[in-house]
Image (cartoon, rainbow, N blue to C red; front, side, top):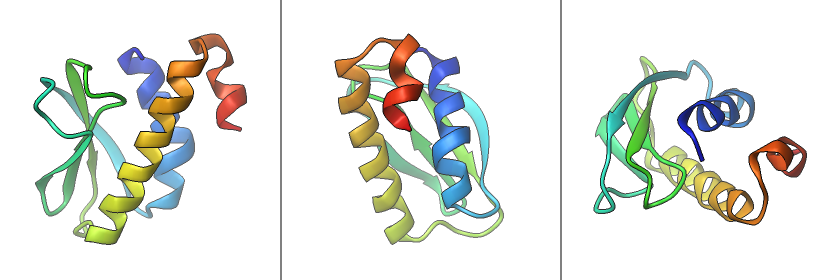
Length: 96
C-alpha cells in the first residue's frame, strides 16, 4: 500500500478513535521493524505490512497507553489482511 493511501486510512479510521492524535512524518523502515512500535511515550510508528519501507508517526501530547498500542496493532493487522485481498480502488469500500 502506498504511503498516501495508508495516511488517508489512518486519518479516516484510526485518528477518530484516539482523541488528540495526529499523523506525523514518515520514517524509513525495514522488515525487522514491528507493525506498531513506540518511538516515545507520545509517538507511535506504524506501517501497513512488514515488507513496507516506511513507517508513519502517530503523535499526541498525552502518552499512548499499552492498551491503545494493542488497539492500533489490531487495526493495522486487519487492515493488512484487507489490503492484501483487494486493490486500492476498492479498499475504502472494504474498510466501510
